[in-house]
Image (cartoon, rainbow, N blue to C red; front, side, top):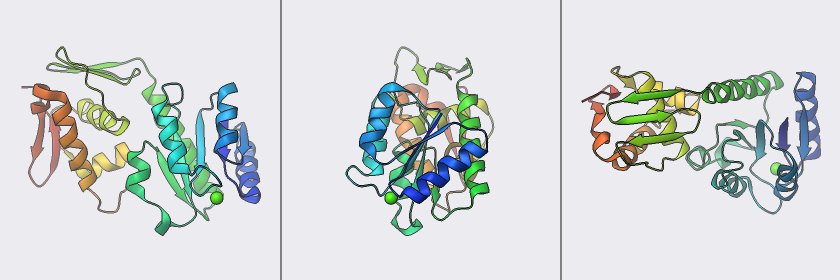
Length: 223
Ligand code: CA
């Protein structure tokens, strides 16, 4: 089931229709209020969330979804009316998995939906990765650093996981952006640096394994 939260009836019906024609079950919802009502009954695989909504806006709804353990792991694609209105960093740091700008082609829309679902399916496999004192439980989104259990944001976790999956290899900022954020971030590679910095702090001593390779990117290296 995919929930499509969109106040414009034409677009909402088009999204639900397109997803239905592609083989997904989809339900259209007109605002945050009806979304939370529907969530109380059913947890969807994915939520498409319009930003400009009457009442509570998409950013605020996203924050609520991500702060509730029951809904935290449901992937969200933000839908925005105009690129210029959209604060990418706000949306993606808020935990959105992708965003799409109106008007969009239905082929592109469906392929974005499939890409996010694929990425999320990979993350639910039961898997643990270790590196030195670090233990990463992939499916539970949990990290242990020695005896500590740091609280990571979704993106910090995914960034750490990506470096751990490629342990010992230098990953460029663009590779990291593309993998963790799912597409090219138009030169806003600073986002990676900010996340690495906060990861290092949260991981304490284990954070020293997160190496900066000047002019290239980052590497997770066992001490
Ligand atoms: Ca709208």
